[in-house]
Image (cartoon, rainbow, N blue to C red):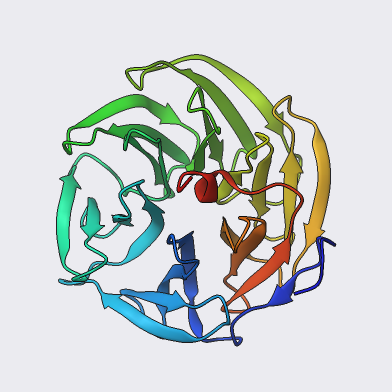
Length: 278
């Protein structure tokens, strides 16, 4: 990997993942995980050197979307088929149901705080609406807001005081204040786009938001004040999500569905998800 240049390169082979590739997340050792490796319903593992394998297969027809790790190293997966948040013990690869909420259209992408509180987006693609949910560490589920746009990408800022949620079809990113109890308030518009779509997003440790622009094939970098700082070009157009890892947390890994692979570039500041381990 070259030094900092914001130029994307392929980490995995094209079509090694299905077009449903999504939800990348890194563990503490720097391995990258994403859903739908080789076939639907799998979680693929990719080493920092690009070696690929199936890590787990989800049971009962479940299919994952977003993936996150808590500070204890447990993996959480949004299972959109059965309305579950699943938990994986990384040493045994045992899967359990952390939370189940039949009122959800689907848990799509998820974000997690340092205290282990999970936030889930919940789009209804048929009518262009969506909801926002909180899942407490004991698995209790609470509806935070209903009848939004098509909620999709979701992230918490580095000090767990702001929650960001985007709406794919409406092309808007919203910010909320977060209190110590994980409650939201003071909703405001961070930025709106006039073209293409929004998918997954992550913060770096400076609070900048990296957003996948599905259909445009770029990662948009947005300041905490809502300024568009730069766009990073990818191979392909349909980027679905991203995460940070590498030895210093400055490798940004992106899932691209029309290419079916993971791509990577190096950034200036480490990612918040990498910073969770510190």
